Length: 393
Image (cartoon, rainbow, N blue to C red; front, side):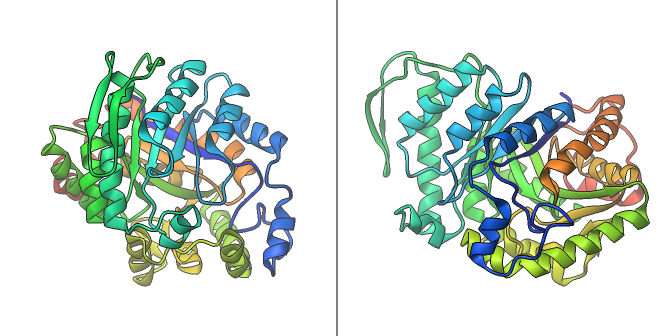
């Protein structure tokens, strides 16, 4: 199994920095929207998808919020305009019945075989859930997600009508005329104990935000232990924001520009997207790391996470292409098989990241990387050796 790279799909240029280092400052919600243009820009989405495919990415994430364009439509556009690139389609359980959701994913997969994956995001922002009519609390949402995935997997595999009796879902004679030719991978995100209990049971790939190596090692150990109860061995993903350049000095100069632009736009972007990450365990963990310093390990940079309140994937790796690739490889030595990387200038960075993809993939293939299991090779430095022992790799 080769290392997997996932980028980002978007229907308009959206970034903490306004889409590019030369973009004008944004000072209000209306200006934030105006600076990005129309919400749906078909040509931009097509070019972004093609840039990822040309750079060697395996998939792009189609993200979700209560205000987002319909993800199934966006995913179909990405798949129709590319020949190899896959999609990781985010979906919130609770708004579409699991039997219908299963058929929607299976139908998309039938048109684009083997290129569709499900990313389960249960929802950490109560206010954003409420905008779509869901007033349940987080523990309830994770219990519902557990049942949702029970029914989805049953729908994908049942060749005869089936019944299901749960607290949230009841099915009588459920069946789907379209079944995936091969299993659709299930990715799962969430940092709370409730998330781990549900995700460890169902996830093929458990996704983490970009914490220091020690934190990822702890999280891998936690999820592995919870998954073992169900006889499962999930793979792992880490999400990061690389800031590479020809030299380390140039990369840090670029990082300073990114931070300056982010601080100028932070308030306006929070209003524009109307999201609150303050109650999410993943955001809390990133903010705790940021409070301890701006740089961790070799070059994990947390200043943007601090400036944005750790609104999602917001920790970066700063350095030369070779240095950033080295840091990405450190995560793979812990057993991480998927790297979700996106830039602060999404289209330009998707084009540029081909160099990182090539460097990391060449090294992991040279040492016989096997995805979920770490190959028996000496790690790059003593710090990584200690962490490998911590996760039992």
